[in-house]
Amino acid sequence: MSELCVEIWNDCLKIIQENTRPQSYKTWFEPIKPVAYEDEENVLTIQVPSQFFYEYLETQYISLLKLTIHKILGPTGRLKYSIVMDNYGSDNPLDIKVPTTDRTNTVNPAVRVPINFDDEQNKPIVNPFVLPGINKIKVESQLNENYSFDNFIEGDCNRLARSAGLAVAEKPGKTAFNPLFVYSQTGLGKTHLCHAIGLETKKHHPNLIVLYVNAEQFIQQFMSSCKNKTRNDFVHFYQMIDVLIIDDIQFLSGKTKTQDSFFHIFNHLQQNGKQLIFASDKAPSEIKDMEPRLLSRFKWGLSADLQQPDIETRIKILKRKAFNDGIELPDEVVDYVASRVKTNIREMEGIFISLIAQSSLNRKAITLDLARQLVERFVQNSTQEVSVEFIVNVVCNNLNIAIEDFYSKSKKRELVQARQLAMHFAKKYTELSLATIGQQCGGKDHATVIHALKTVANLLETDKKFKTLAIEIEKNIC
Image 1 (cartoon, rainbow, N blue to C red):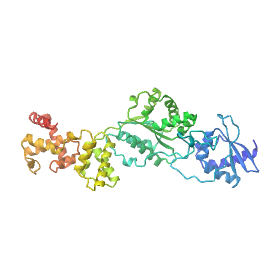
Image 2 (tube, rainbow, N blue to C red; image 1 turned 90 degrees about the vertical axis):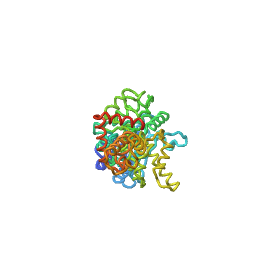
Image 3 (cartoon, helix red, strand yellow; image 1 turned 180 degrees about the vertical axis):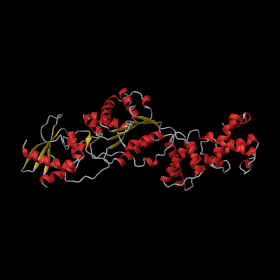
Image 4 (tube, rainbow, N blue to C red; image 1 turned 135 degrees about the horizontal axis):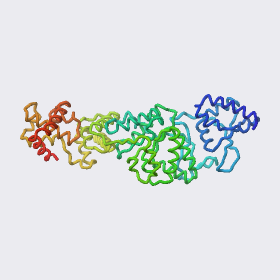
């Protein structure tokens, strides 16, 4: 090794060290060894530990290397890599000129991403040192900008998971929520929350590599790496991620070899303070055909479930959706749709989209009748609707009260009691908001409904005659 090449490389390192973080410098530049300097060609040759190492430098630090070499060796200076090719038995250095093209900044640093090569013609064949199954492209976080925390409505059903997600985004890898395991039935917001955590993390830490990937995509990438004999590169790539988000993690069930590689990825990221976030349709203890060592690791952090949203939360979700799309929806339509679609947020949003489409195509206003038609068409058991109007009719029939008297402003005791019973059963069977119930029971306000519910609850416990009457009315409602 000539003293001149060492001197030149040391001068380069001084510049590089000033422009990189200490940990990055230690990881990616200290292992490099200067090999030779060809004065006539003005070429510095450096030796890197592996093909993977070279690929990372060439994508992540290309601009810095180019500027450094040009500053030390002049505009004609070039850099040549000598790669330790353990798997190929080749000692020939790979001659690579420092690219002169600029690379624009991306949300994530540029690294190598495992991809599938099902089409023979897509395989990289120009450079024999580019491993099959690996392509030099910039990592996209694969995050959906629409799935932000601003659009994730908070309620009792998701408060724990949402709060944990915000904490993780602020301090990834540095909270007790690592891994963060989110689970629920389908359509309750797991995917939205995963994307929201990723987006929020990028706001707080723009230099971190955040990657969202579905388990099926992860499995396909692993299979491709096995087929192309690049399994180590697959593992190395994922071990470089700072915040790894894997959706539908339950799909790893029964995939023994994939689980084995994932186990090593998990351990590496966890031990190096990286953040892991998983989403599943089952709690960790309910996932079958998963290695016990993985299940135990899923439980290291926080497992938070997303429950079915209550009526108030569903109304907020629909109103936010309408606001974001610039659509004005009548409150009665919002309340009706939210009351009929109870178990799946995605289905409720589908009804909303259908309403917009029907209104636009037919040039009709969005009305309660249109909402009823769509709900009856798409929602199971929608014909078994219990409306406030139906409840009022049942109550009035049982108490021998005229409908017009029920809706009058009279405060006679029997009319007040009839309204209170109607509000009680409306709250029990319709899941409408309290404000809507009051509006449909004679234009009463929110406070009046609360008072009515308390009064009926007290009478049911203390007045046997009233309780018997309420039971008879309820039989006609059910």
